[in-house]
Amino acid sequence: MQVDWVPVTRFEQNCSIHWCEATRRAAVVDPGGDLYRIQDFLEWEELTLEVVLVTHGHLDHAGGAAQLAAETGARIEGPHRGDENLVRNLDRQGRMFNLKVQSYTPDRWLEHGDRIAVGEQFLDVVHCPGHTRGHVSYVDLASRFACVGDTLFLHSIGAWEHADGNLADLVNSIRDRLFPLGDDIRFLPGHGETSTFGHERRMNPFVGDEALLRYRAGEAPMARVSDAALGGD
Ligand SMILES: [Zn+2]
Ligand SMILES: [Zn+2]
Image 1 (cartoon, rainbow, N blue to C red):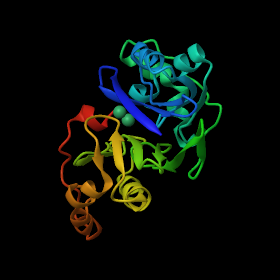
Image 2 (cartoon, rainbow, N blue to C red):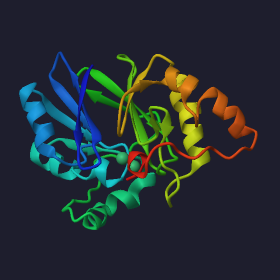
Image 3 (spheres, protein in one colour):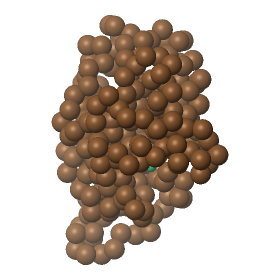
Image 4 (cartoon, rainbow, N blue to C red):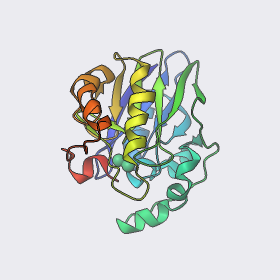
């Protein structure tokens, strides 16, 4: 499957477009806003949007999902039901930033292990609680590429210091559900640059092999190197 991405919203959130070359059918992950950028891309590549996918219920990821689905006729899937409250209150999240945003109910809440067909290709759903309860990642196993939202970043991890966050869950999601998919998998985080699971396993100061030994020995995790916006809302 082919993939490309465009930054959207003032949070420079990575919205990705995945498409099956044979059928030109596409999935869009996390259309947080600036829908014209996504629509231009779909038009330029002559793609038909089949499904809008959401990693978690924060505004910068889910804020444009309802509108994009309405404008294209695509269905919306995700995130996991653990984010139901966030998704139902998207309009309220928007008002905090003076943005007009639509809440939605997805056509399907996703479960760990679900599979989404995009033309003749597939994305696999990995439930990754920790940044939020219902956070999911989307993995293209054939192309060795994953969209991990605000779970894992280049040399950092997602924010957990808020009501929906949980550090132990976040570490377990990354270590037990993402890393075992393979060191060679390249991932696109919700913000910033791509990396690979193998690179983070070696170098990440929060969930790398070395950091994990300290963490499991009871040491508190070191202060996050990212600023609040990076792994935040
Ligand atoms: Zn985000
Ligand atoms: Zn977030």
